[in-house]
View 1 (cartoon, rainbow, N blue to C red):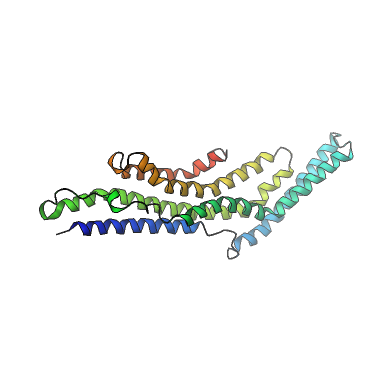
View 2 (cartoon, one colour; view 1 turned 135 degrees about the vertical axis):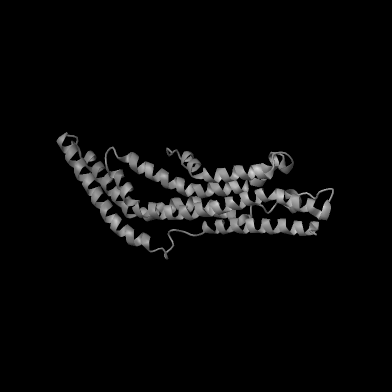
Length: 264
């Protein structure tokens, strides 16, 4: 026969597994794509930076010829402005990795600090908040087992959501590496007249990828508060809130892009 203490231990084990899986995902936030061990960024950016500098020079030559033909270069100030734009674009391209690093560290430090300040988004939930002991044990204590089985969907949904966040954050790491490697090329368009929107869209997209980690972390740490606001397990149920959390994690990328004003 199964006694109630055994059921409570099963629930504790589930909570520990879910918290452990979640905190493994949080640890991914501490992995920086700018770590010296990821040598592909420096290797690839050397080649990409050369292409980007060629584009900057080409944009400068086109702009210079265009302005000269249209008689726009009628003062030293206009010539200086054109050369200054060219030099500024060159500096941006040559420091693309540092610029991307500033954006990444800005968003990532906030998300990482939330992870350091909290262990496990289910830490505040005790066994009593998840499962209540039946008034009657029933034949061979089967009511205890049935009560435990009722909680299984909640555990499976939460564990699945934790695995999804692992996949999202690992995929986000690869995405940031790719964005960083190619960043000199879109940033080179700052030197081109009428191409500024391309560079702005790239920066917004990069910021959205960085922000996605923070969006996911905030949703997970808000889970317990939202559950309490909705009446806890007695009203809406942790299971429904957990399902909403899982759906929110899947939409986190879209929400991050909307937050930075990037079209989805």
